[in-house]
Every structure is written in structure tokens, then in C-alpha cells.
Length: 84
Image 1 (cartoon, rainbow, N blue to C red):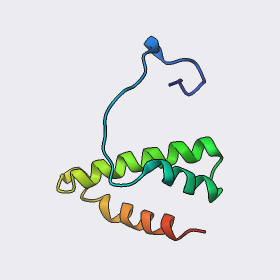
Image 2: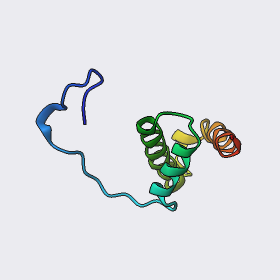
Image 3: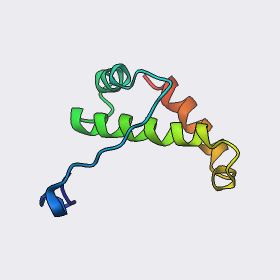
């Protein structure tokens, strides 16, 4: 990972974690890339970030942190899924 100005991250260690997801993320990345919403790199980052975030929300659906945001996120996902 690099900083916003392109410099290598501190320590040079990769970020590693394990996570599950109810979707096939790689196929979703390809679908978003094909829609030409963003360049390929941005489409990949967007899709992976969105799926990681949405899975945390799903697994913690009763957490009060998401109460106000949940309806907006649901609307955003509907709009994303219906966009050409």
C-alpha cells in the first residue's frame, strides 16, 4: 500500500486479514469494470471497499453505529445496481 502521494507505506509490511463475503468479489469487480463507471484500478478499489464495508454492516446490522446510515446505503445500492 502506498500513501496518497505515492510514497511506499511505512514499514513495508503488507496488510493482511481474513474476511468472508456472501458474494463472489472478483466477478463483481469485473462487472463494475465493464460498466465503465471508473478506470479499472478505481473500479477495483471501489468494489472491494464497498463489499468489505457492506459485509461488516450486514454482520453487525443491529449495531447502532449504522442506524442512521443504513437507509441511505440501501438507496445507494439500489441506485448502483440499476445504473447502466
